[in-house]
Image (tube, rainbow over all chains, first blue to last red; front, side, top):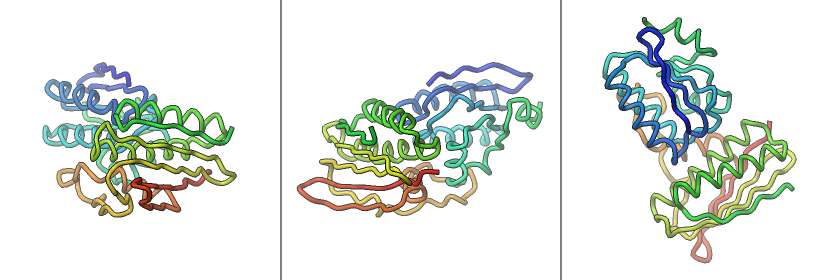
Length: 111
Length: 134
């Protein structure tokens, strides 16, 4: 999995690409943990993430819990349909606002 | 080619490599993205469970068959007896601060797969499931 980040105003956009599975999720958690020490508003662009397992869901949930504990804000965009389905089934979708595009996500997050 | 056979050691990277190859096989075989994703995900859940409870010395053989309306998966492993149908469901309606971090994998299997069977024989767990094609 490749992870990169950039700033749009005060929002940290995290772009993930590849497979978020048991092998990649420790790196994802570690990277996001470091980012939450500097930022509290996140948009996670998952348009390049084509495979997510429960280990990946736990990584996302860990990040959401951390951001909420900071009174921050977090949203996702570009989530591929099979990944969206597992977010819906596991009840994670209502905890994270999910948008179709990056610009929609940025417009909805507080600046 | 409508059958995929592989043996795997229950180690995180080996499991990830196997499920990636299985996904490539399913997509090359014309299986839709949802079914291909969910078969790979469930496979990884079951094998990771084996790795967690029995460590890297456990191994499994995997057989995936693309059928007309579904993908059928059979796994035989030498781990300790474990029926994947037996774990409790997590509360997926709890708010974020109360959400438990575990138990989602086998819950997803029960939601997305059908015909989940388990038997113990010859000191091996034999688990099978099917995922409908769309």
